[in-house]
Image (cartoon, one colour):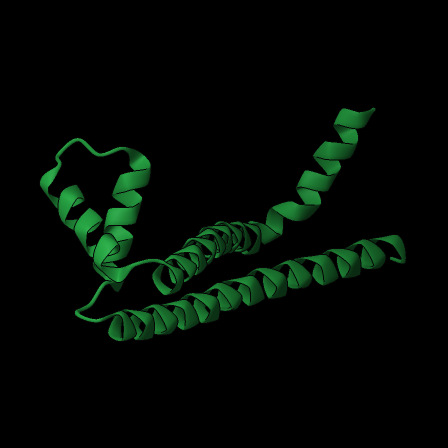
Length: 133
């Protein structure tokens, strides 16, 4: 019994697979950008609260070391993106990067929500049309 329900639901949703796939990809990108935003906020706190020279020194050590852990690689590439000559310049770049990540993240959330809403409404309309034919 339950197999036929899933099959019928799949047949109803089959016509909307491009919307569903694009929405799923948008959801994945949203999650990745959300994680990036959290990582950048942690970098912001680290940049503001810790010694800038210590961050630069650890960056130089990571650049010289070919065998880094995954966490160290992530920190290394984040610092390449963010670190500048002075703490103020680094903070400025970090804030602009955060703003861009949050803006892009919310665009993908909007795309996901709009596409799923389109699928929901068209699916309900088609079910109603079939019911009242």
